[in-house]
Length: 399
Image (cartoon, rainbow, N blue to C red; front, side, top):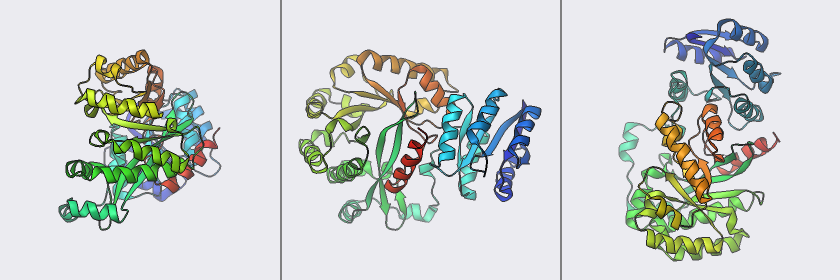
């Protein structure tokens, strides 16, 4: 394999040049090709270290192209270029897993130069962890003016500034959609979308987390009611909220209002939240299970739970933390942790979900270790409701 060589397949020369210029800045020798046939021949001839493929080129059969690359036993790091959620991209992602190709990620179109700089650097240097949601154009002055206080949170609650994004959860064995995780965002009137880590810890201290959780439940259930009855919705619940008996009533009322079967709802709680006071957690979680809700222990492996404590609590699902998933290719320790976690879950009769899947190798590795379900940017980043429905329609069209 020729080190630091990039072969670009793209019929848009301007876009191809953007990729080429970025790669050349990292010392790559770049060739641009517009024909899929010539592209495959060139891959065979020079065996480049990296490939960048515009998967939505007219008359290009992306799945057939990837099959051809698999026939060549291609080990190049592959960057797919496409709009998120399109049928061509979805088919290509599934084909990459099937053929065990090393797809490092998706470069979203239309291109944004500064955004591409962030994610191309990671793909070209084979660093797989890049949080697309954390990328914003916020300036230093805007960050300094971003103040979270009780008044700002109260205004956000009163004016319905909180909204949900949805990330698909997929069956890693067959690629079928099983549900979504609901992720809260704050649509700040001046600074745009803010992530939960910037405001949730504060709301837990002030006690404002409960009305926010109530809004999340209503928004999430309204979305879930529009989905097929076999699909689920996962909702993150704060450790502060599970101590509130009123939460049970809120869930019950929401199920009745939207006609939701509780077994379609997965409540995610962090390992630390449940283990700090296992006696109290057992009481609340048992009542939720009695109502029919599924329970997931989130970020597993980052806390200090014992098997005995985990076994006594009525969880139905164990979620593998993304810190292990994103490092499993380079760290034997991470792979061992994931393998032992899956074995533990199986022994306790729990389903397993991996988060943070950012490339096809992670999806392949998790599937081979026996992980049942997964989510991550390789399949889809969190989306608003309209985008989620469009993505779902396109994904289902592959079956």
